[in-house]
Every structure is written in structure tokens, then in C-alpha cells.
Figure 1 (cartoon, rainbow, N blue to C red):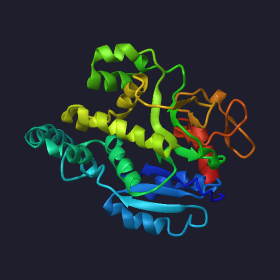
Figure 2 (spheres, rainbow, N blue to C red):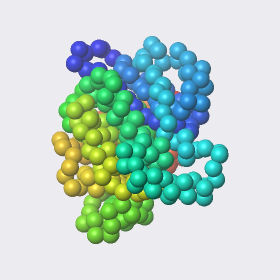
Figure 3 (cartoon, rainbow, N blue to C red):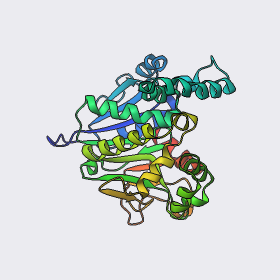
Figure 4 (cartoon, helix red, strand yellow):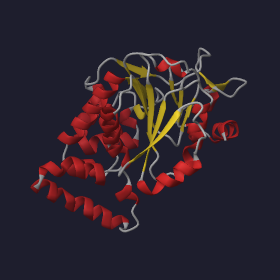
Length: 306
């Protein structure tokens, strides 16, 4: 990609708990684009050597691949504690935070599920590095395609699920939102279309504000709520429909730069002769999310990118 003086993009995603093969398809798909920026994978300490060896010099001619050590997921994946023991530890840890409130942030980061903790890593990394545009993305079930110079735009871009799937008729979101905010809040936004937190992108200012808003909400909510389950997407949707985020672009599947395909009918998904998923107007979206929910499409992508 041509290096613009005012365009310095980064793609960030967590790979904690994954073997390198689980994110190889994601990285290989970026290799076939014109992306010349930085790709950051957050990995646990015991993954670093394995990742560095597996991907050694593989992408250097196209983009810079960085690995950043993180603590997210280390408690969840630890073999030192059983499932019930982990629940007890999380429950008891709230009493330590009650006595020492200054520990709340660190305890959420360490004890919360990775879906929640990753927001701290994203924010910390951006504070230490200068980028003009940012992608926050899942890595196991995302394909990157098309012209990534289109990232050079303003605003916050949020992926949306199919319009048929509403917050109030999806069991996961019913639980996430009612657990965190109660049934009254759920009823207020139950008629709204689901926004998926799996792929989000925008200019630095917009992403910085998005992350700060999410983290501020994490810190305002009760500690035990934040470490109990992966409530991040419920929080994401609640804030969206309260109008807290600014300069928003809602990316409808097959009609934008983010195609979230999880509940889409495969009859609606069109591929061109190069096996790129197309929007309804025949343009190529930059991001394909949840393709693995459709085994035929997963097979096509595995043959293309592996």
C-alpha cells in the first residue's frame, strides 16, 4: 500500500488461547490485500515463542506483524483451578476490591473473560503508539479482503447483525443486557437491531473515544458483574442505543465494509470468480465476520487462504 503521510493504520486483535493455525487464515487474507500498515496480535507469554517461530518473516514484505504480551485469559485458561474454583475466586475477589477500590481496574483486567479484558489492551497500546486509523477485530473467524486504503476515513464504523435479529429475541443478548442493566433497560431497546462487537474500525479519535467510553462503563458497573461473564457486547449495544458514541456508521451485512454473516441466509451471499464475498451492489467489503457459521463458505476460504 502506498504510504500516505497522513495515513498510518493498525489492525489489532487478540489471539490468546489460540494455536497459530487458528489465526493463520486471518493473517493470510490480509497478505492478499494492499495493506501496508501494522497488524498487532495480543498473545500470552507462553505463546510468544511459538508465534514468532511459526510466522517468522512470513508477512514482512507486505505488513509489519507485532506480538504484544498480554495477561488476558491467563486466569480463565489456567489449569491450576477447576471451573467451580474459578467461580469462587471471582466471587471472593469482589470483597478485596471493596476494601481496596484502586485494585478494581487491575482485577477486572485479570479475572474478566478475554472479551472484556481485551479493551484494556487495545486502549493501552494506542496510548503508547501513534496511528491515524484503527481496526479492532476478532481473529479466528474474520477474513480481510478488498482495498484497505478505504480505512482512510472519518467516523466510527460498527458491524451489524442481520436486520431480522433483534436484541429482544436473541437469548444471548437478553441475558447479557438484563444481567447487567435489568429487564427495564432490555425492554427499552429490545426492538433494536443487534450490533456485533467483533469488528469495529475508524479514525484514531473515534476509536479512542469508543474505547474510553466502553472502559468507563466497565469501571462504573459493579466489579463482580464485569468479571462474571463476557458482557462486553451487551454493554456495546446499550451504549450505542443510548446515543453515547459519536459519528457512527452502522455497517449492514452485504451493504457496507463489514459483512457479519452469522445468521445470514447463504442464498444471499454472492462470491465472485476469485471467491471474494460481494455486497449487494457488487462492491467488495473489507471485513467478513462469522464466515465459519457456514461450513461451505469456511471450506472455500480454507482452500483460498491456507
